[in-house]
Image 1 (tube, helix red, strand yellow):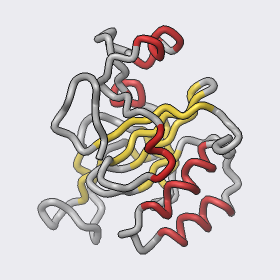
Image 2 (image 1 turned 30 degrees about the horizontal axis):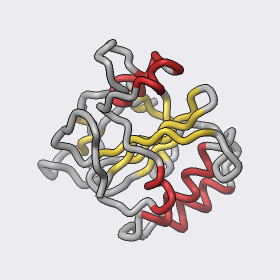
Image 3 (image 1 turned 120 degrees about the vertical axis):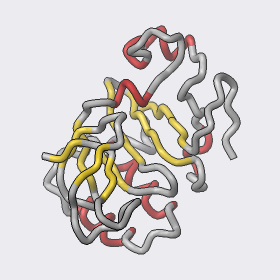
Length: 171
């Protein structure tokens, strides 16, 4: 369970900032560690294989499904931003503080752009908006948005059994 020190939202998301270090030296390293932690997903081996066989740069921003909220991993300067669901046990990632919507003056002094609306707290939602991510499950790039757009995609699960609900712009 995550404990927030600042503003608490009614959300199942967590956001971590991971320094570039020996343990995690790329977006792919973090994704490779996180994918098996989603123990309820059957496609983990397939996604790990796709990740390892990829011809993409190891710091290509990545998206994959996790319980209640998708995971997004993005390299920004010398840190990695991880926005994910807090309903999984993320193992050693739990040592990194949950920073979204918290007053982290030391982080904002070094990375003021993580507060794009100048609200006084780290806001991954707004910062990652319109960034491009590689969806491991779908195999293509998309832009993250804050709006839940309705995408026509017959055959996929949806809220009304007619359309697939997605968060993003596909291209």
